[in-house]
Length: 410
Image (cartoon, rainbow, N blue to C red):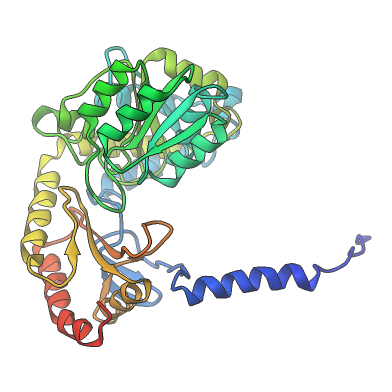
């Protein structure tokens, strides 16, 4: 075998430039570290060789290792194989994909006659929505705390990108009123992933109607969790009792649904536009059909098992009650996301490390994921946790509080 000769190593300047950037990140307390799990997701996990109580996962209903979901994935692999083989528009759209899309559309119902379209990730889904529905001459109006994928989709669309202060309906109205754009889109998280608060969706929907705009709702952290009674688990639209043909709804399937992927549900004309023109749909290999089968099983549990949500919301109330009066600000959140704002990057990392040493995995979140000066612990509660888990974490935080106050780390 003849080997092609090397054309020269990377110049020292290129490598040194990257190394300086990495060193600067570490010095600023921004270095990220991957942890390796040696167990399934759950309240207790084995990570980096240690067994810990995990308050880090978005598996809000504890479905990632549910036996029915695992069995559906196993049976799906046996029937359909491991991979899809091609994009949905070539030969990769299987019967389980079609069935899942029908079931999702009927479940969330953002408008009468809605269709749904599945994606391999929420990132791809949001890129699809924003680049297919907006372009040059249009404008996208985005909450300043939106997830990065909404921001990236807006930038890739080549539309004017207009940001408004977090949840500030008045500021958004002023920007919409001043815009001369041909087509307008309002884009927002439904549940903000680092704060846990809800977007003012009724007011945003009213503005969308007033200014004839699309309302793009990223419900990554509300789908499966929010909604009550017969609408339990249907998400933030159900929580507010909203439905409209101008709503384009995105839900992720790797959080409360327990598996992987995402979907968009909207008016059939919107979905068909995505099928025909959205590059992150057209030019992506379809997700494995076994994943669709697992998701169908997860959706059935999500829809029918009210006890899981009841337990989850009991834990949320319990944790918030235990944390009153502590030295750190616990942000207002009615969701499983319970952020404890520490402030400085180093302080958040130190507090997370102290909890790790006590057997708790709680991630420290730092800029640019959150604004400068608001580094925090992002504590996530799940239906897999027991009351004792929540009490143990609250006890550990209470025990650490004086130490951090003395050292000035908090």
